[in-house]
Length: 94
Image 1 (tube, one colour):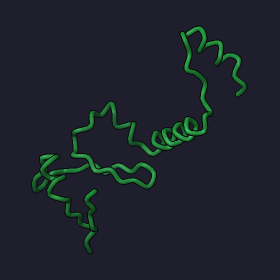
Image 2 (cartoon, rainbow, N blue to C red; image 1 turned 45 degrees about the horizontal axis):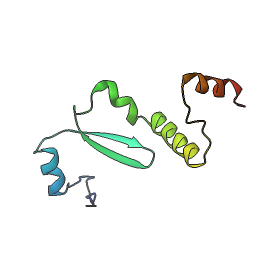
Image 3 (tube, helix red, strand yellow; image 1 turned 30 degrees about the vertical axis):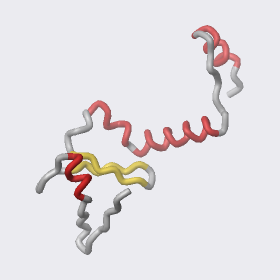
Image 4 (cartoon, rainbow, N blue to C red; image 1 turned 120 degrees about the horizontal axis):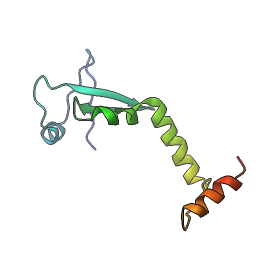
């Protein structure tokens, strides 16, 4: 994985392979999204507005919680059908 070093004035120089793959050029705008301790740079306008919620800190926190629950086996299912799923939810001790 290529790395990026921050310069004295906080400038970043992206690896050539990233610039080519994303078809960036001088003046290209990048949205900065923070997910936990991860920084995601996305060419501006390439994520539809109705999908930007996914990169909010709250959504990413809940995604991490869900991943942890799945890893710990703290889940219900799989189910044969919807009725079985509904019954399991009704009888679950929450």
